[in-house]
Structures are given as structure tokens and as C-alpha cells.
Image (tube, rainbow, N blue to C red; front, side):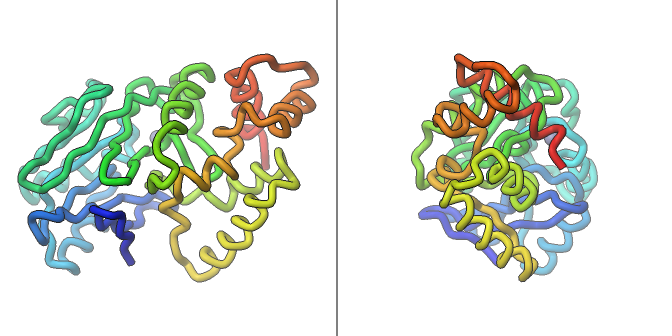
Length: 264
Ligand SMILES: [Zn+2]
């Protein structure tokens, strides 16, 4: 299975219980691919062998082991550039990219803009280009990453940055969390029709064993409570949960995030 954006062909490689490693085909050099967040090498190597592709570079969104753990083994199969954020916890990085910078891969015909999006971790980045967003564990479909290192204010600012990308942007997240996230989203907004329709679709897709990703930013704006901290129904739900009034979207976000952490 693969997903065609206007300029990109992207396919998921499942790893561990719910991680996705995304393989991006180079439009210029057929059979050469980028791997995004290869937490495990074995499934990537298996997919490269199955498809006859070769690895051209590795993109990393953040330092967590389930996103970088496969890098040493992949490099043993062949040295390729390892592109990631400024963080000493990513030892194999050969190229550091920073907010607002372009990450050009001219021989592959690919170019991404780097978005610094702290919150899940302090140095978390996203790669945005060719109508696609690779956002690691910051934005999930119908949810967002846990705050391991950042503050609610930081994460809310990061998600606000993503919110302003074009709505047709395809969102490639690091995990298959959509069904569980939607249960929480519908607890916050029980009458959100887009979320109810999406839940029915997600249930069908998962019953067939297929990924729910990529999502689109336009859909996320309709169903993802963490991108809707200024929508009256979401603000009211957060205020009822917190038992106090919430003046700022970042405060609404903080309440939602803490609520989700406890939600079963
Ligand atoms: Zn993570």
C-alpha cells in the first residue's frame, strides 16, 4: 500500500506494536528511498529487499528510541546521511537541521522545510514539503503527543504552527493511535459530526488491518480537540472538566492534555 501526494509516494512500514516508519520514494531517482524515524531496522530492511529499493537518507523527528533505534543497524548496511534536530541524544546524526531551514536533497528531487515543534520533547522537529508533513509524535490523528519535556504553552504553540499549514497537507504521524484518540475526542465533543463519521471510517479501516494514516490537516481541524482549543464547545468541555473558567487556548490545551493522560 502507498499514498501518493502530488509529488510524493509514501508507504508505511509497521514497527513494534503501533509505530509507523515512513518510506518516501525519490521522484528523481527511482528505487532510492528516505526512511523517516526508523525505530527498528529489521522491517525497513525487509521492505527494501521486498521492493528492490535502496536507502538514500534517514530523517529523524526526535530522539526517542522507538524512532531512532534502528539507525545503527541501517548504517551497518550502508552509510547514508542521517538528518535530525540539534540534540546530543541523537548520536548518529550527520546533519543538523533547524527551524525555518530548508532541508534540500537535490539528487533525490526532494526538499523539506524544518519546523521546530517542541512539547513532546524539547528538540522535536517536523519535515514539511511536497504537500506532506512528517510530524513524529507531536500531532497524531485526533490527538497529540504526551508532554515528556515541554510545557502546555510550548506544545500549544507548536500545534498552532501546524494548524496554519495548508488544509490539504497530508499528515504522516509516528503512531497508529487514531481509534483511541477518537474515543477521547468524542468524550470532549460528543456531538461533533465530523468526528462521529471519522470514527465509523476508522473502525472499518482498522477492522481490515489497514493504517488510518495519513490524515489531512483539514480533517484534523474538524476532529482533533487539541487543534480546537478556541472552539466554544471544546472550551466549555475543558472548563467543566477543570471546574474553572479558562481564558487562553493554551490553558484549554493544558486541561485537555492532562484529561487525556487520565482517560481510559
Ligand atoms: Zn516520542
